[in-house]
Image 1 (cartoon, rainbow, N blue to C red):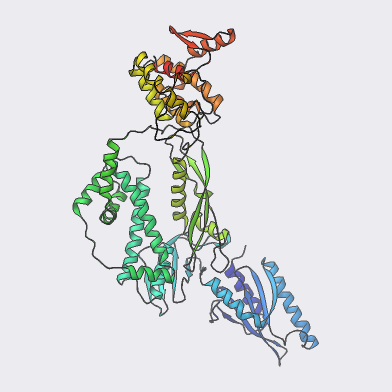
Image 2 (cartoon, rainbow, N blue to C red):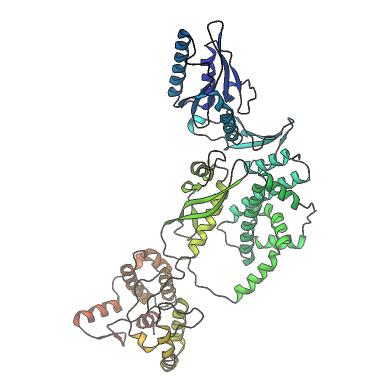
Length: 599
């Protein structure tokens, strides 16, 4: 496929061989000597030596249309031979458009003004240029020059906003400044600053550069910290604070692209010398200290120090440590989960090329690491939708291109999708109604502890006294989370509830793992594998065995409890005996826990 630049050059050559005095102009109507960058091709249509039928304008629109504008003197009022030549000329243009896979349309000259306004509005935010250099005009008074790290091949789908090696901003007076960053949205913010009379090295320009520098350092820090476990509990809190701070900084810079947002940030700007607190810096460094300190983490410490001074993160860390000392939680790292899931981020803010925001959403696919249980976003799965039109370039296709790998919204979209996916993943199995016979996770652990520590009389006495409370709470499927779940003797006769969740799998695995009798642990694990597989199609046998601390290859055949239960059922018995203890054929949750705990 021929590039747009080559198509325009070919059109210029076609018009030139007709001995037409062609003038090339850009979308603003200014003359340009580069035909490959021209938007308008203007000439007077002269037939013979004396018959001048007026001005003709030929354009190639961003939508891929070849449009011909002409006045009333061309057409029916022409002399016969001149009319035939004119129609032959239009036929050649139409053939040229089809050969280059473009549309073709004839329009009256009085519509040219509106077409140029439309073209200028679209061109103002688009990218154009050469193989190694591209340009874009975020504002009328300033433009960005992009030097690419490798040649751009538009025929193969290369985009001009990718592979940015160097970035320059150029003012209306012709002054050009090299920017200390390569992020295009930050370059647009600096272009807005220059169009408002500023320069990159003044106070506010330096503030923009410093903010972008903090963004780059935090991004590198978060990539380095991702997936690591720190000896200091406060480090995780600091990482979360860094994520929030990074999002706020990006939003702040993107606001500066528009005139109104720039004015707001400029009015709120208060130059002040931020001092680094040595004691705080040492504390933060100790949080992230490992055998070798990652260079990216070392570089992020001053930024985190500023964040500490502004938001008092150390206080939050102290509160977290105090809370962690008094709190225990069930370890659910060994989950039984799907390999992937899909999600949608709503109310996502896109920054249009004109600086005005647009709102929409992002679709994503999240992958689950089978070993660590971590959520990872598939970059190629990102798709976006947004309310917009061709003037602000917020179409669904444009937004999707921006969030795909290489797009200048890609990093922000990945961050938003990652946060949303982690939030969705952390909410799994919460607020799920349990069956009447089900036990709340914490109460089942309490029951297991009572079975270990209380005598039969104490256990019977404790739960019998609360029979009325249990019956009252038994009326609905959900219990009041602030009230204890009461269990009466009647519950001991209930069958195991249907539809266990991954938390139930994990709870059983934890109890099995604590059983010192390895042979019994293997037998019970095999029995529960068969049982859970029938009750929940998501059940993963190999991961359950691993959670129980059992090598699946070492599993032997046979299960005394299950075998005795099955045999009693076949013989029509109401009770059966295992290890000198009597169990009812109508198996209850309490019997399973007793047998599991070795009581």
